[in-house]
Each structure stands twice: as structure tokens, then as C-alpha cells.
Image (cartoon, rainbow, N blue to C red; front, side, top):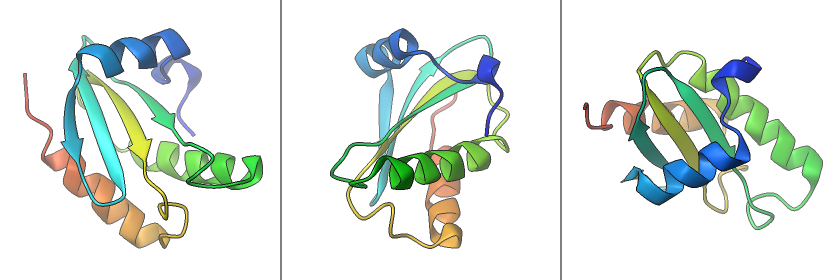
Length: 105
């Protein structure tokens, strides 16, 4: 899990979604916006995982993977259906590939 200071608030997520650039993958989409320091938010809908337990487990997995990223921007991760069914290594591979495709400032 990311420390609270590195997680975006609801207002922060909404502002990144409004002005950020999108990098699309098969199971995830990243929305990135320039910022002086790294912060991240994750959006998981009920179509992705029906129960709150499954959504929170996926959220914790994604936040754990985001700890490795050290860029200076705000990142919002949007999930697609079947993302919760991915094995951990496939989820990590897709997130890493998307982060590598993020355009620099």
C-alpha cells in the first residue's frame, strides 16, 4: 500500500482525469498529469469486481506495484473488467509496460 501522502484524494483523481493524458492497455488505463511529486489513485468499478473485498484486494495489489514507481507526476489507474482475474505477474507486467510508455514532461 502506498503511504497516504502518495495517494490522490477524490478531488485529485477528478482533476487528473480532466486534464491528464491517457495510456491505454488491455486491462488497465493510466491517466497521467505533470506534478512536482508522485501521487497515485486507483479507480475500480463494480463491473471489475462485484464485492468490496475483491475490489480492495485488487486496489492493494495495484498500490503495492505503484510503490516501485519514482516519477514526478500524478497517475490514476483505471481498471477494466477481468482485471481482477489476472495473475499477479501479468498485472505487474502490464502496469510496468504502461508506466514505461508514459510520456515524459
